[in-house]
Length: 424
Image 1 (cartoon, one colour):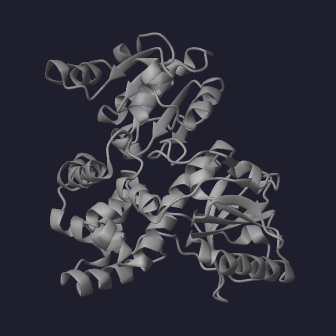
Image 2 (image 1 turned 90 degrees about the horizontal axis):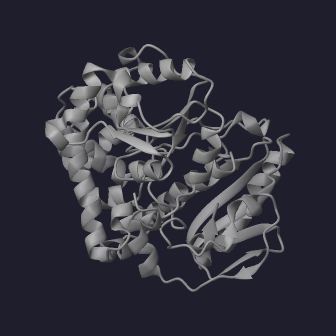
Image 3 (image 1 turned 60 degrees about the vertical axis):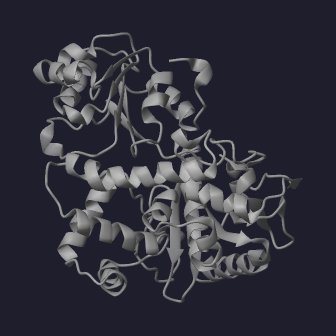
Protein backbone atom coordinates (compact mmCIF):
# COMPACT_ATOMS: atom_id res chain seq x y z
CA UNK A 1 0.00 0.00 0.00
CA UNK A 2 0.98 3.63 -0.46
CA UNK A 3 2.04 4.76 3.03
CA UNK A 4 1.49 8.39 2.03
CA UNK A 5 -2.21 7.71 1.50
CA UNK A 6 -2.69 6.19 4.95
CA UNK A 7 -4.48 8.28 7.57
CA UNK A 8 -3.10 7.45 11.00
CA UNK A 9 -5.35 5.76 13.54
CA UNK A 10 -5.04 5.91 17.31
CA UNK A 11 -4.81 2.11 17.47
CA UNK A 12 -1.53 2.18 15.47
CA UNK A 13 0.58 2.73 18.60
CA UNK A 14 -1.04 -0.18 20.42
CA UNK A 15 -0.56 -2.44 17.39
CA UNK A 16 3.17 -1.66 17.38
CA UNK A 17 3.36 -2.24 21.14
CA UNK A 18 1.50 -5.57 21.04
CA UNK A 19 3.52 -6.89 18.11
CA UNK A 20 6.57 -6.65 20.37
CA UNK A 21 4.84 -8.68 23.08
CA UNK A 22 2.73 -11.36 21.35
CA UNK A 23 3.22 -13.79 18.51
CA UNK A 24 0.11 -12.45 16.80
CA UNK A 25 -2.66 -9.91 17.28
CA UNK A 26 -6.30 -10.07 16.23
CA UNK A 27 -7.92 -6.76 15.27
CA UNK A 28 -11.69 -7.03 15.67
CA UNK A 29 -14.39 -4.57 14.71
CA UNK A 30 -17.23 -3.79 12.33
CA UNK A 31 -16.87 -3.97 8.57
CA UNK A 32 -15.82 -0.76 6.83
CA UNK A 33 -14.10 0.69 9.93
CA UNK A 34 -10.60 0.46 8.40
CA UNK A 35 -9.21 -2.77 9.89
CA UNK A 36 -7.71 -4.02 6.63
CA UNK A 37 -6.15 -0.69 5.68
CA UNK A 38 -4.62 -0.24 9.14
CA UNK A 39 -3.37 -3.83 9.18
CA UNK A 40 -1.79 -3.41 5.74
CA UNK A 41 0.01 -0.31 7.02
CA UNK A 42 1.42 -2.28 9.96
CA UNK A 43 2.36 -5.46 8.07
CA UNK A 44 5.06 -6.54 5.59
CA UNK A 45 3.09 -9.18 3.68
CA UNK A 46 -0.54 -10.18 3.37
CA UNK A 47 -3.04 -12.91 2.56
CA UNK A 48 -6.61 -11.77 1.92
CA UNK A 49 -8.85 -14.77 2.57
CA UNK A 50 -12.01 -13.20 1.14
CA UNK A 51 -10.39 -11.80 -2.02
CA UNK A 52 -12.63 -12.52 -5.03
CA UNK A 53 -9.66 -12.91 -7.39
CA UNK A 54 -9.43 -16.21 -9.25
CA UNK A 55 -12.94 -17.25 -8.27
CA UNK A 56 -12.08 -16.87 -4.57
CA UNK A 57 -8.91 -18.91 -5.00
CA UNK A 58 -7.39 -17.64 -1.73
CA UNK A 59 -10.22 -19.10 0.33
CA UNK A 60 -10.01 -22.40 -1.52
CA UNK A 61 -6.27 -22.52 -0.90
CA UNK A 62 -6.72 -21.78 2.81
CA UNK A 63 -9.35 -24.52 3.11
CA UNK A 64 -7.03 -27.08 1.50
CA UNK A 65 -3.88 -26.14 3.44
CA UNK A 66 -4.19 -23.44 6.14
CA UNK A 67 -0.47 -23.59 6.95
CA UNK A 68 0.47 -22.68 3.39
CA UNK A 69 -1.12 -19.21 3.64
CA UNK A 70 1.13 -18.33 6.58
CA UNK A 71 4.31 -18.20 4.50
CA UNK A 72 5.53 -14.64 4.07
CA UNK A 73 7.45 -11.80 5.68
CA UNK A 74 6.46 -10.89 9.24
CA UNK A 75 4.25 -9.26 10.36
CA UNK A 76 1.96 -11.07 7.90
CA UNK A 77 -1.63 -9.92 7.55
CA UNK A 78 -4.32 -12.60 7.38
CA UNK A 79 -7.49 -10.67 6.55
CA UNK A 80 -10.97 -12.04 7.46
CA UNK A 81 -9.48 -15.24 8.92
CA UNK A 82 -12.89 -16.35 10.23
CA UNK A 83 -13.84 -17.36 6.68
CA UNK A 84 -11.53 -20.36 7.30
CA UNK A 85 -11.44 -20.96 11.09
CA UNK A 86 -8.69 -23.60 10.76
CA UNK A 87 -6.29 -20.70 10.10
CA UNK A 88 -6.49 -19.83 13.81
CA UNK A 89 -5.09 -23.18 14.94
CA UNK A 90 -2.45 -23.11 12.19
CA UNK A 91 -1.24 -19.71 13.44
CA UNK A 92 -1.27 -20.87 17.03
CA UNK A 93 0.88 -23.86 16.03
CA UNK A 94 3.25 -21.66 14.05
CA UNK A 95 3.74 -19.36 17.04
CA UNK A 96 4.48 -22.35 19.30
CA UNK A 97 7.28 -23.42 16.95
CA UNK A 98 9.16 -20.14 17.43
CA UNK A 99 9.83 -17.45 20.02
CA UNK A 100 9.57 -14.72 17.36
CA UNK A 101 7.14 -11.93 18.30
CA UNK A 102 4.89 -10.06 15.92
CA UNK A 103 4.46 -12.81 13.33
CA UNK A 104 0.83 -12.23 12.32
CA UNK A 105 -1.92 -9.64 12.23
CA UNK A 106 -5.40 -11.12 11.90
CA UNK A 107 -8.58 -9.19 11.23
CA UNK A 108 -12.18 -10.19 11.83
CA UNK A 109 -15.55 -8.48 11.41
CA UNK A 110 -17.57 -11.18 13.18
CA UNK A 111 -17.02 -13.45 16.17
CA UNK A 112 -17.31 -17.16 15.48
CA UNK A 113 -18.25 -20.11 17.66
CA UNK A 114 -15.28 -21.36 19.67
CA UNK A 115 -16.03 -24.97 18.63
CA UNK A 116 -14.82 -24.13 15.10
CA UNK A 117 -11.22 -24.00 16.30
CA UNK A 118 -9.35 -26.00 18.92
CA UNK A 119 -7.14 -23.62 20.88
CA UNK A 120 -8.03 -20.27 22.47
CA UNK A 121 -4.73 -18.61 21.57
CA UNK A 122 -4.34 -17.33 25.13
CA UNK A 123 -0.89 -15.88 25.67
CA UNK A 124 -0.12 -16.10 21.98
CA UNK A 125 -2.77 -14.05 20.16
CA UNK A 126 -3.84 -10.73 21.69
CA UNK A 127 -7.14 -9.05 20.79
CA UNK A 128 -7.56 -5.38 19.95
CA UNK A 129 -10.86 -3.63 19.22
CA UNK A 130 -11.13 -1.16 16.35
CA UNK A 131 -14.05 1.18 15.76
CA UNK A 132 -15.14 3.71 13.13
CA UNK A 133 -13.02 6.85 13.11
CA UNK A 134 -13.23 9.27 16.00
CA UNK A 135 -13.56 12.99 15.27
CA UNK A 136 -9.85 13.41 15.93
CA UNK A 137 -8.93 10.63 13.51
CA UNK A 138 -11.09 11.95 10.68
CA UNK A 139 -9.91 15.53 11.15
CA UNK A 140 -13.15 16.91 12.65
CA UNK A 141 -11.49 17.55 16.03
CA UNK A 142 -8.49 19.86 16.40
CA UNK A 143 -6.98 17.60 19.06
CA UNK A 144 -5.99 20.56 21.23
CA UNK A 145 -7.12 18.79 24.43
CA UNK A 146 -5.91 15.39 25.61
CA UNK A 147 -8.53 13.29 27.40
CA UNK A 148 -5.72 11.58 29.31
CA UNK A 149 -4.53 14.98 30.58
CA UNK A 150 -8.04 15.98 31.63
CA UNK A 151 -8.52 12.69 33.50
CA UNK A 152 -5.26 13.27 35.37
CA UNK A 153 -6.05 16.90 36.20
CA UNK A 154 -3.24 18.41 34.15
CA UNK A 155 -5.10 20.02 31.24
CA UNK A 156 -4.68 23.75 30.68
CA UNK A 157 -7.34 26.31 29.83
CA UNK A 158 -7.34 27.14 26.12
CA UNK A 159 -9.52 28.79 23.52
CA UNK A 160 -10.52 26.23 20.92
CA UNK A 161 -12.80 27.00 17.98
CA UNK A 162 -16.34 28.05 17.19
CA UNK A 163 -18.66 25.18 16.32
CA UNK A 164 -22.16 25.42 14.90
CA UNK A 165 -24.99 22.97 15.39
CA UNK A 166 -25.16 21.99 11.71
CA UNK A 167 -21.57 20.75 11.89
CA UNK A 168 -22.33 18.58 14.92
CA UNK A 169 -25.41 17.13 13.21
CA UNK A 170 -23.43 16.41 10.04
CA UNK A 171 -20.82 14.52 12.08
CA UNK A 172 -23.60 12.41 13.58
CA UNK A 173 -25.31 11.69 10.26
CA UNK A 174 -22.14 10.78 8.34
CA UNK A 175 -20.35 8.93 11.13
CA UNK A 176 -16.78 7.72 11.21
CA UNK A 177 -16.57 5.49 8.14
CA UNK A 178 -13.22 5.92 6.36
CA UNK A 179 -14.95 5.68 2.97
CA UNK A 180 -16.80 8.92 3.81
CA UNK A 181 -13.67 10.95 4.53
CA UNK A 182 -13.67 13.03 1.37
CA UNK A 183 -17.43 13.11 0.81
CA UNK A 184 -19.91 15.87 1.54
CA UNK A 185 -22.71 15.24 4.03
CA UNK A 186 -25.27 14.19 1.42
CA UNK A 187 -23.03 11.48 -0.02
CA UNK A 188 -21.67 10.49 3.38
CA UNK A 189 -25.21 9.74 4.53
CA UNK A 190 -25.62 7.44 1.52
CA UNK A 191 -22.55 5.45 2.67
CA UNK A 192 -24.14 4.92 6.10
CA UNK A 193 -27.44 3.84 4.58
CA UNK A 194 -25.71 1.36 2.29
CA UNK A 195 -23.89 -0.03 5.32
CA UNK A 196 -27.23 -0.72 7.00
CA UNK A 197 -28.61 -2.34 3.84
CA UNK A 198 -25.59 -4.62 3.68
CA UNK A 199 -26.10 -5.64 7.32
CA UNK A 200 -29.75 -6.55 6.80
CA UNK A 201 -29.57 -8.10 3.35
CA UNK A 202 -26.21 -9.89 3.37
CA UNK A 203 -23.88 -9.81 6.37
CA UNK A 204 -26.22 -11.26 9.00
CA UNK A 205 -26.63 -14.48 7.03
CA UNK A 206 -22.87 -15.02 6.72
CA UNK A 207 -22.13 -15.16 10.45
CA UNK A 208 -23.38 -18.63 11.34
CA UNK A 209 -25.30 -19.85 8.25
CA UNK A 210 -28.62 -19.54 10.09
CA UNK A 211 -31.42 -17.99 8.07
CA UNK A 212 -33.28 -15.40 10.13
CA UNK A 213 -36.34 -13.27 9.50
CA UNK A 214 -35.04 -10.16 7.71
CA UNK A 215 -38.19 -8.20 8.58
CA UNK A 216 -37.83 -8.89 12.31
CA UNK A 217 -34.12 -8.01 12.19
CA UNK A 218 -35.00 -4.65 10.70
CA UNK A 219 -37.75 -4.09 13.27
CA UNK A 220 -35.35 -4.72 16.15
CA UNK A 221 -32.61 -2.56 14.63
CA UNK A 222 -35.09 0.32 14.27
CA UNK A 223 -36.23 -0.09 17.86
CA UNK A 224 -32.63 0.00 19.05
CA UNK A 225 -32.16 3.15 16.96
CA UNK A 226 -35.12 4.82 18.68
CA UNK A 227 -33.60 3.86 22.04
CA UNK A 228 -29.96 4.64 21.29
CA UNK A 229 -27.81 5.54 24.33
CA UNK A 230 -30.44 4.35 26.83
CA UNK A 231 -30.69 1.38 29.22
CA UNK A 232 -33.82 0.05 27.54
CA UNK A 233 -34.66 -3.58 28.43
CA UNK A 234 -35.53 -6.42 26.07
CA UNK A 235 -39.14 -6.24 27.25
CA UNK A 236 -39.28 -2.53 26.48
CA UNK A 237 -37.83 -3.16 23.02
CA UNK A 238 -40.60 -5.70 22.42
CA UNK A 239 -43.23 -3.17 23.52
CA UNK A 240 -41.64 -0.41 21.43
CA UNK A 241 -41.83 -2.57 18.31
CA UNK A 242 -45.48 -3.33 18.98
CA UNK A 243 -46.36 0.33 19.64
CA UNK A 244 -44.31 1.96 16.87
CA UNK A 245 -44.20 -0.67 14.13
CA UNK A 246 -47.45 -2.50 14.93
CA UNK A 247 -45.63 -5.82 14.89
CA UNK A 248 -44.32 -8.30 17.43
CA UNK A 249 -41.17 -10.29 18.27
CA UNK A 250 -40.84 -12.76 21.11
CA UNK A 251 -38.26 -12.20 23.84
CA UNK A 252 -36.11 -15.20 22.89
CA UNK A 253 -35.80 -13.91 19.32
CA UNK A 254 -34.85 -10.47 20.59
CA UNK A 255 -32.09 -11.99 22.76
CA UNK A 256 -30.80 -14.07 19.84
CA UNK A 257 -30.68 -11.09 17.50
CA UNK A 258 -29.04 -8.82 20.09
CA UNK A 259 -26.26 -11.40 20.56
CA UNK A 260 -25.88 -11.56 16.81
CA UNK A 261 -25.49 -7.76 16.55
CA UNK A 262 -22.82 -7.86 19.25
CA UNK A 263 -20.97 -10.70 17.50
CA UNK A 264 -20.93 -8.65 14.29
CA UNK A 265 -19.66 -5.57 16.19
CA UNK A 266 -22.72 -3.61 15.02
CA UNK A 267 -23.48 -2.78 18.64
CA UNK A 268 -21.13 -2.10 21.54
CA UNK A 269 -23.04 -1.66 24.77
CA UNK A 270 -21.53 0.15 27.76
CA UNK A 271 -21.46 -1.74 31.04
CA UNK A 272 -22.56 -0.30 34.40
CA UNK A 273 -20.00 0.97 36.90
CA UNK A 274 -20.77 -0.31 40.35
CA UNK A 275 -18.78 -2.00 43.10
CA UNK A 276 -15.60 -0.28 42.03
CA UNK A 277 -16.87 2.80 43.88
CA UNK A 278 -16.84 0.85 47.18
CA UNK A 279 -19.91 2.86 48.16
CA UNK A 280 -23.00 1.69 50.02
CA UNK A 281 -25.16 3.12 47.22
CA UNK A 282 -27.10 0.39 45.40
CA UNK A 283 -26.53 0.65 41.67
CA UNK A 284 -28.45 -0.59 38.66
CA UNK A 285 -26.90 -3.27 36.48
CA UNK A 286 -28.34 -2.34 33.08
CA UNK A 287 -26.13 -1.94 30.03
CA UNK A 288 -26.46 1.22 27.98
CA UNK A 289 -27.45 0.30 24.42
CA UNK A 290 -25.14 1.60 21.70
CA UNK A 291 -24.59 1.15 18.01
CA UNK A 292 -20.91 1.24 17.11
CA UNK A 293 -21.46 4.48 15.19
CA UNK A 294 -24.25 7.13 15.45
CA UNK A 295 -24.73 7.10 11.68
CA UNK A 296 -26.31 3.62 11.96
CA UNK A 297 -29.40 4.69 13.95
CA UNK A 298 -29.64 7.76 11.72
CA UNK A 299 -29.71 5.55 8.63
CA UNK A 300 -32.20 3.13 10.17
CA UNK A 301 -34.61 5.96 11.00
CA UNK A 302 -33.95 7.84 7.73
CA UNK A 303 -32.97 10.93 9.70
CA UNK A 304 -31.94 14.23 8.14
CA UNK A 305 -30.61 17.48 9.53
CA UNK A 306 -34.11 19.02 9.55
CA UNK A 307 -35.65 16.01 11.28
CA UNK A 308 -33.05 16.16 14.04
CA UNK A 309 -33.53 19.90 14.50
CA UNK A 310 -37.21 19.14 15.10
CA UNK A 311 -36.45 16.41 17.66
CA UNK A 312 -33.85 17.83 20.04
CA UNK A 313 -34.31 15.02 22.56
CA UNK A 314 -33.31 12.39 19.99
CA UNK A 315 -30.49 14.66 18.82
CA UNK A 316 -29.20 14.76 22.39
CA UNK A 317 -29.08 10.97 22.62
CA UNK A 318 -27.32 10.72 19.25
CA UNK A 319 -24.77 13.33 20.31
CA UNK A 320 -24.13 11.24 23.42
CA UNK A 321 -23.63 8.25 21.14
CA UNK A 322 -21.11 10.19 19.04
CA UNK A 323 -19.12 11.25 22.10
CA UNK A 324 -19.09 7.80 23.66
CA UNK A 325 -17.94 6.26 20.38
CA UNK A 326 -14.93 8.59 20.54
CA UNK A 327 -14.36 8.00 24.25
CA UNK A 328 -14.16 4.24 23.70
CA UNK A 329 -11.30 4.77 21.25
CA UNK A 330 -9.56 7.43 23.33
CA UNK A 331 -9.61 5.53 26.65
CA UNK A 332 -8.23 2.39 24.99
CA UNK A 333 -5.08 4.33 24.09
CA UNK A 334 -4.18 4.84 27.76
CA UNK A 335 -5.53 1.50 29.04
CA UNK A 336 -8.63 2.91 30.68
CA UNK A 337 -12.20 1.54 30.49
CA UNK A 338 -15.56 3.18 29.85
CA UNK A 339 -18.72 2.59 31.90
CA UNK A 340 -21.93 4.41 32.79
CA UNK A 341 -23.48 4.99 36.22
CA UNK A 342 -27.03 4.71 37.59
CA UNK A 343 -28.14 4.11 41.16
CA UNK A 344 -31.49 3.62 42.89
CA UNK A 345 -31.53 7.22 44.14
CA UNK A 346 -32.01 8.37 40.52
CA UNK A 347 -28.41 9.52 40.24
CA UNK A 348 -26.96 9.12 36.74
CA UNK A 349 -23.62 9.93 35.15
CA UNK A 350 -23.41 9.56 31.38
CA UNK A 351 -19.94 8.01 31.34
CA UNK A 352 -17.39 6.80 33.84
CA UNK A 353 -13.74 6.45 32.86
CA UNK A 354 -11.87 3.98 35.05
CA UNK A 355 -8.11 4.53 34.94
CA UNK A 356 -5.45 1.83 35.22
CA UNK A 357 -4.86 2.54 38.92
CA UNK A 358 -8.57 2.03 39.72
CA UNK A 359 -9.41 5.72 40.11
CA UNK A 360 -12.34 7.07 38.12
CA UNK A 361 -13.55 10.17 36.32
CA UNK A 362 -17.17 11.22 35.85
CA UNK A 363 -18.30 12.55 32.46
CA UNK A 364 -21.52 14.32 31.57
CA UNK A 365 -22.27 14.81 27.86
CA UNK A 366 -24.25 17.87 26.78
CA UNK A 367 -24.90 19.27 23.34
CA UNK A 368 -25.53 22.91 24.27
CA UNK A 369 -23.37 25.30 26.31
CA UNK A 370 -26.51 26.35 28.19
CA UNK A 371 -26.55 22.87 29.79
CA UNK A 372 -23.03 23.06 31.23
CA UNK A 373 -23.96 24.55 34.62
CA UNK A 374 -26.62 21.93 35.30
CA UNK A 375 -24.31 19.10 34.20
CA UNK A 376 -21.49 20.35 36.44
CA UNK A 377 -23.82 20.63 39.43
CA UNK A 378 -25.02 17.07 38.82
CA UNK A 379 -21.45 15.74 38.74
CA UNK A 380 -20.45 17.56 41.93
CA UNK A 381 -23.61 16.47 43.75
CA UNK A 382 -23.26 12.78 42.86
CA UNK A 383 -19.54 12.77 43.58
CA UNK A 384 -20.20 14.27 47.03
CA UNK A 385 -22.94 11.69 47.66
CA UNK A 386 -20.66 8.81 46.69
CA UNK A 387 -17.95 10.08 49.04
CA UNK A 388 -20.48 10.59 51.83
CA UNK A 389 -21.65 6.99 51.45
CA UNK A 390 -18.12 5.65 51.82
CA UNK A 391 -17.12 5.55 48.20
CA UNK A 392 -14.00 6.80 46.44
CA UNK A 393 -14.40 10.33 45.03
CA UNK A 394 -13.68 11.03 41.38
CA UNK A 395 -10.18 11.91 40.23
CA UNK A 396 -11.71 14.44 37.84
CA UNK A 397 -15.15 15.59 36.73
CA UNK A 398 -15.74 16.51 33.10
CA UNK A 399 -18.49 18.00 30.95
CA UNK A 400 -17.99 17.22 27.26
CA UNK A 401 -19.94 19.72 25.22
CA UNK A 402 -20.84 20.15 21.57
CA UNK A 403 -21.30 23.90 21.33
CA UNK A 404 -18.59 25.60 23.34
CA UNK A 405 -15.47 27.40 22.15
CA UNK A 406 -13.07 26.84 25.05
CA UNK A 407 -11.63 24.10 27.22
CA UNK A 408 -11.29 25.16 30.84
CA UNK A 409 -11.57 24.20 34.50
CA UNK A 410 -14.45 25.81 36.37
CA UNK A 411 -14.17 27.20 39.94
CA UNK A 412 -16.02 24.09 41.18
CA UNK A 413 -13.24 21.90 39.73
CA UNK A 414 -15.26 20.57 36.79
CA UNK A 415 -13.55 20.55 33.39
CA UNK A 416 -15.46 21.70 30.31
CA UNK A 417 -14.16 20.27 27.02
CA UNK A 418 -15.51 20.66 23.46
CA UNK A 419 -15.78 17.30 21.67
CA UNK A 420 -14.38 19.01 18.55
CA UNK A 421 -11.11 19.76 20.40
CA UNK A 422 -10.68 16.37 22.09
CA UNK A 423 -8.18 13.61 21.37
CA UNK A 424 -6.76 10.67 23.29
